[in-house]
Length: 124
Image: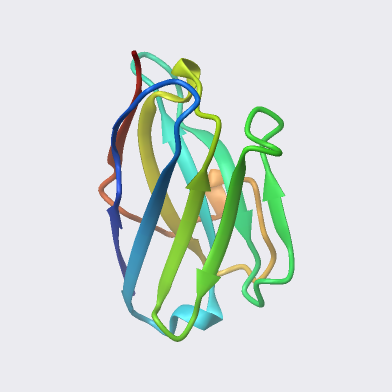
């Protein structure tokens, strides 16, 4: 079992930045790949970014590539999502997730554990 809690959401103006954190407990954090997903009102949950168990490999959705950076600190059992140059279309509830896979998978069906989500609103 892995328990996940997200922090860092909020309201930010277009062009601004936010840093999301995901604190993990339970099963050894360093043994799982991790990912971020988001869900806007009326839309399906979509992939944002993922990081392999080793932290060497990362994947990004085309819509956030070059603006968002995923990272992990296994000593602190925490994953991060640095979000820069935010746009109104980034507004969504952001979820962190853990996968028993070792690679940076994009498929939400390969994630076994989910946090409760944190709201990110980009608006002037």
